[in-house]
Amino acid sequence: MKTVITYGTFDLLHVGHINLLRRAKALGDKLIVAISTDEFNALKHKQAYYSFEQRKTILEAIRYVDLVIPEESWDQKVKDVEKYNVDTFVIGHDWEGQFDFLKDQCEVIYLPRTEGISTTKVKTDLSER
Ligand code: C2G
Image (cartoon, rainbow, N blue to C red; front, side, top):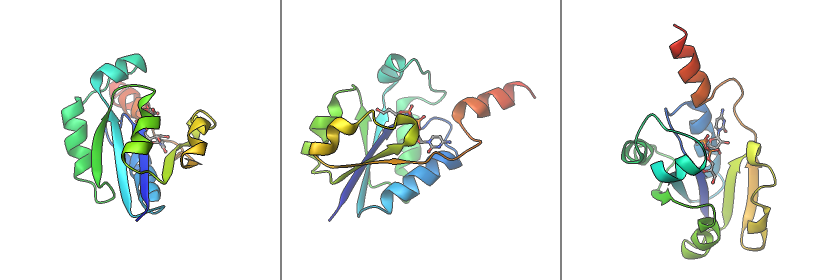
């Protein structure tokens, strides 16, 4: 039973997010997604359109996702890997190298991002209509 975990805001869900989640799930048997709380988003200088509860509900409806937990701090990853017995940590390669400190606890994989789509791009394109 291989457990995979990933972290993110996942606001205005798009194909880039789905590609990441599908590939993350394919690396194991169970995928846990830690969704940034609204408060943690503020620390990332991000303001999500959808609230934490809405983003959590949306992610829980995705076939690749087995469990959704809150991401409240930068340093919870070490504890999460321990608590959920995680085998693999996955995230987009825009974070390349940032989470190598997890390598003594689990496999760390940075996956290529999906080009041409982002939550910011969606917001910008819509505002320019
Ligand atoms: N992603 C992707 N391709 C895109 C957009 C996003 O593969 N076109 C991936 C990101 O690399 C990330 C995940 O989808 O792995 C979620 O993206 P965000 O919600 O932007 O996550 P982020 O704000 O980078 O939060 O502690 C880690 C942070 O919480 C990550």
